[in-house]
Length: 227
Image (cartoon, rainbow, N blue to C red):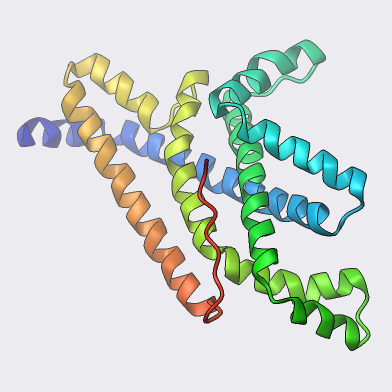
């Protein structure tokens, strides 16, 4: 089996690299979308007017209550009926990013709740207005507190990027299927794919752990697992 794995790597490494590149693009861009969207939604839900907060709550619950694959199919196959046509890669990034935004909204909301009330009161007492206090006092601490959950989310998205296979994006799983169909060595091919995912997850976890250690606030943390 070792010999077969070596053969596949030597013979098909350009395809594996292409799949790896697309997997990393999907993960990185959708994660960035999720972070930006999640923070915005959390701030609206905590500090925004009641109608806006209710709309955010409805969005978060709708996204968390439906499979990501269904969301991908809606974006890729249903939006063209309304004149919105996305290529497979863009559709996959949009679906995963919007899904991640809903989960990260809860991570950030939990992080905001973990910040002592005295921080808010102190910010207002020195003359900061509401959104100035949010920007200069609450958000910087929110990043630090939410980092453990954000690390989990990054690893989740790395694995969930594989759903792009269903709309023919040539990411790692898609390339694995293609190579397997050429060699009939499916076990060996998917062993290589699994090893790549594990290596990427370890690298991401280590990088985020170092960032978390550097920015952590002693005694304050929050972990909001996916449900």
